[in-house]
Image 1 (cartoon, rainbow, N blue to C red):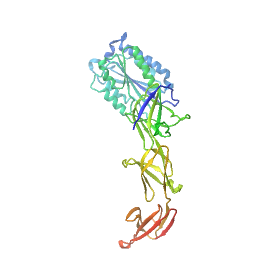
Image 2: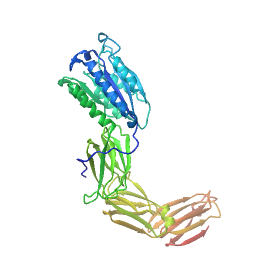
Image 3: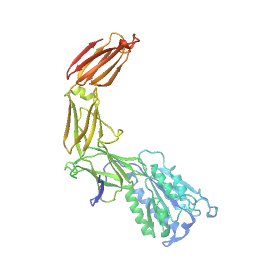
Image 4: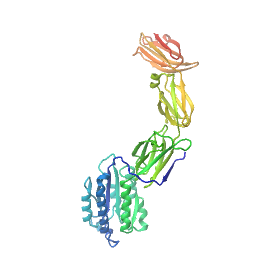
Length: 453
């Protein structure tokens, strides 16, 4: 099965839906290496200046973007010679009005310690208060690589797998090219050789953090046309498995798949909740274009009709699975409902008494496959004395147990499909198999049979 993602240029529009709370944790490097010269000043001074510019811009959009920020700093508490690999602290926690506090801390921080990147990333999971529906983002600003024993890449990956954060951003301040790979594996890496490139990186990151990108999901029919619709879709984060978005697929008034809006920060796994479901994994979206996701989902309709008895139909369930597929891949349908399913061959088990089976039923594109089953008859058994009994379906030399009758009940009512049956009875008061009584009977559609024993 071919699954593809295609991007075509389209104007980008923001969604009108309320925005989820976005929480940005800045992790700022204040190690001694930040005292090196860069772009006409010390790295620490230039980075602080650029950070303040960023915070000023975030403050202007904070309310409209539903945004909160926090600040963790490392390398700023212990002198470098102590080699303090736990020198990392959440200086400003998340709150609706924290930007001014973050700005003040950045302005006054001094560089003097080592570089515990892995430890800082690991501690960041405790910086985000519990929230089931927030976008948690880390922006790491550093000029060096890990100087302690941790592995920042493994820590970052584990945070993403747990669903604590989306893929982090890293801005490298004049990083040596030989060290880039050590930071690139942490997340989305941007190298800033000068202040201009730092600003460009920040603009790109802020654009991605504060905007959704447009997506169109084409559910393709047998002929490769996007005509299928009205199926639920769930978008899951590829690493954590967390559900990020759910939509009901819709064709707009023009008959085209409707545009939806997704966070560009995740790599997605898509599940289209057809019967059976269709999956597309590792979807990477592009910014500034209409991302078109194509998923083959050709469907037809199946309809199980039992003798035009609406009340009885509503009681009966249908077990459906793809022919040749394992038993655990079973879907439950209603007998009185026309149900869309993917095209192909199916085996059906209909929970009548006795059960009715159909094998290798062909479902074709946009066609309805109707399976007619004869209406049942009604059979009532009344027992004068408590007894043990078994209701058997009689197919010549094949007897199948349908129901066991126990002494605690004297009245039974069954809906039985047309056919031959036996009732094997022994009253509870008898302790001899020779006292067994056998009652044979036939049921036709629409029969109403009452037997007293």
